[in-house]
Length: 450
Image (cartoon, rainbow, N blue to C red; front, side, top):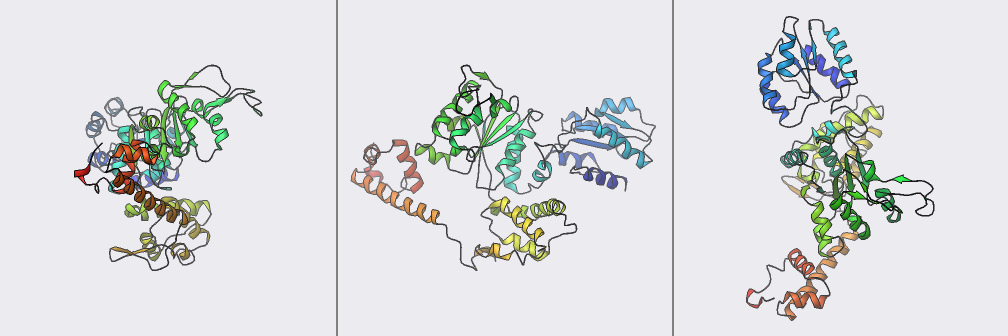
């Protein structure tokens, strides 16, 4: 009863809580997500058992110890590193008052505190239950320990931004700024100033000095979203920043040193962009020290009910629709959907369901009419599938390109150097295109030559 009431108290304050009855359960929980703080009821658990967790370097965060008034407070603090010891905890109201005072103290800055940089982060990463996302969580924890660049790729709406924020959130830079920049959303002419800043009078309209995002992220993390859309001239300048740690404002005469960790994300195939010379290979290798591929939602369907419940809880409060809940039929329908828009699409569907008061997913059903549904272990389209002209054009271009490459390879007796020259592309681009088109496996080895 006491622990349930305390868990409810923390939940109301915006924390995600876990109640554990023994150190083993705590250790299992800490293996997944580090805690902002731990409340230890020493009436049920001996200090030595919790001290074992500390010696194994589990991240208990701040420790609040509840005692029965007879416990040696000094011994508890030494064993657990408790920042707060509350004695005589038979009166739960007094315990709540003491904990509220503790959480309000200026020296307490828990990582799970909801601020502008990590709002909603802890609940969302707690929904990563699929094998693929748990594997990504392990990579995040390892990558966060060292200041190396990380390239995050995946389809639109899979949660690449959340992965970037999580890396920052669990790193040693978590108390410094996290500065996101969408490279595709800022006009090309303004992006250089946005990233690196400008001096007064550098161009028409530059009436005052402005610091760039790299300077704003000093000692913290900058997240370059949609890095594949970066202009080639800015790619060169970004490469210099990664190499030297210095930025130059537009119109500036001197370099400014910045201590920034760079994370980048893209929904494009940067390998193909490098092969076709649309993205600098040296910048690609600088960014791609650690590569995290976020799987689409259709490949982690077991997370759909958890994500849906999270969005329902959040948006029912935001839209002032208390008591809204999903029917089992709606959950089944959500599980069958293919989600080309991934997590973002699921979030928008839940928003519409709440606004339209459509708990059974009947008014919102038109959203799914163009998508195949899963029945008997296979995907079967029961409605006309949506056709995207860009996809049709892309596939036609790929077929035409493959035929032209194959034709030229046969004319040159599979001499790849000559083929690249006649097609007016680089040798590296030809190799990539051949691999992508499956022509590496198709060539007759007896005719192979350089």
